[in-house]
Image (cartoon, rainbow, N blue to C red):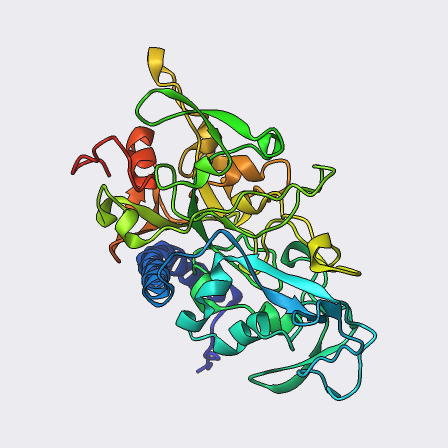
Length: 402
């Protein structure tokens, strides 16, 4: 009697593997569907934390921060109005000796820097606010620490900005939506933007006037200073610096900082933050690099970061609603959805992409001034959205407006 050898033939193995692949293929969409709501929920929680941070900041300082702010200097003695002779980095391997890789610079950053103490990032905040620490470093190697101990890393580059000190621009989990896979930054990754009010073209800064179409349907000519008022938005400019193209000593207008009491149409009807797939790193105000912040003789040599209103913020674009006119598709929430995840923010498109966008389905998480969050559908009536962006919007926000 002949014995047959037990085992699986190649055909049997192929059939088993095919069945396994079919099962995995059927399960993956379900698993992805389960991860999607979880990521959206986590993102919503992070937006809420940003809102609470803004409320705590306002309670501590009596005002809300700006879209661009100055946090001090490095290499400058404010008392004697003179440059320091020796520049040291206390966080370097040999802090007692002067470093040739350091230069005097102004510390200009975004609204997110102001929130660092409330985001469990006090050491990073001290790097920005204590004049003994630099936020720039041209050193080829900077020592820093991570969970694996001491490691060597260089200054930032690319979308993270050229030459920022890595200890001044770490990746903070709270600033990264887990669904945002489009970030190409090595440092300071960011998925969130603040409400900077109405669109005001950078080309009109020197001219000083711009005509907008107000949400109530009227045309109104406003100055840059007026564009930062409580009628149009929340966060304004708080950097006293000159125009690079002004050719004189003219400084950019400063915003009168708002308080939570300025939201006359209800804190629950005013948006503070939203998601964005295009936001620049949280530490980078405008498209500034190290050369833009370094000065030779006096801090006033540093110019205003021209596009700072659009790189870490969102704006609303005026629309003439008469005759059935609609806003440009790129200005809508998640506008041009088929392309939005592939867009990269540049100086040419920053003003257009300064609007909410996300990798979620059909909407974005937004944070309201009352501490709550909402999921706003990208099909929302843009007149309602403009009313939500204005602390004193004249249009009422219907209950079903979302």
